Image (cartoon, rainbow, N blue to C red; front, side, top):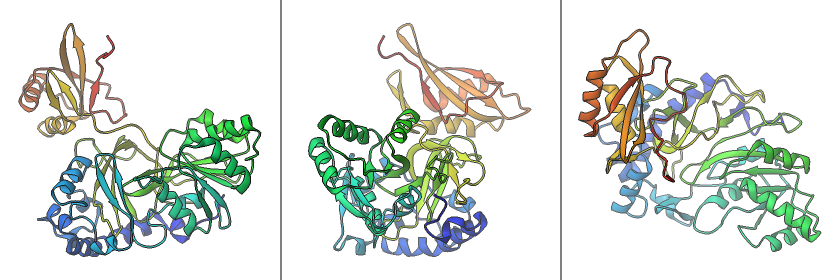
Length: 416
């Protein structure tokens, strides 16, 4: 699987970076002129000055709570969509509710590239089991597969026996859906005596593809790849494989996206390799989300993929960044932990650990010092109380904190 969707995939990282940021200022200016909500959100920022990652990092991060507030104030899209995208198009609703307009043209969710990397080609027949009801899940893969030249059967979810009968008759060559539902179909086919062995490839998303399940599919003659996508952006990153269908490490960031990894609760980019929240700037003229915080965590992998694609690699989904926790009846947010770190130049990172002591909540702030520094625990204890309005202890983690992206670790046993 070493052929490429287009030349963008093999351009040098410096070329890609230069191209993205050369076009970003004019894209931002145009998007702000058409989308009133975006113009208000970025008020005070000059779009023509956003010519680098450092400049981009000075813009605010837009997370789901703010997006929902904007949409509630100016329904349905919060003034973030280009009005031209709302003519003769689709609109979807995700839980929240959050409204998502579909982009312009073929492959508006940028999934064709990920399907190509998974081995799908023009002429393949795709059995698509994502939901076609309200949310954009099914359309993300449907639009991309058809743009690639595939014939798509919109199976949707449920009615497993009918789906198996349809697959036995249509002979699809590929499956798209959640990782576990493919096994449901295969087991039902065996149970009913239906032959769906025509399925040789699969692109899965929306859940964890465990190594044991991937291996089971491989033993049944199906090469399964996965992608990371959201309803707001579309496909953000995807897997590639060698000529035998063995997946390469990590996921490759999709083209035409700028992905940053930031410390949860902040907009501050972390060093490559450190776990943080995925923040995406999408160059989608229909729905330009700028520094959109997905709430998912990952880390950048060093180097390029062995497949020859040169895009940034991430490790895939590594948990959720929304760690807001109620302690002693009051919410504590990762932003507050970040505020404590900002007040102490001798602190590199911090983690608030919450436990139960008897019948009471207790919290301890674990501090990773800047190399060579000696933070003052008493001063930090006072800052902790000032910022959170709660009392807690402070511990210096001289050996460092785990690289897992956790800012607040709730270790209370809710079953006890």
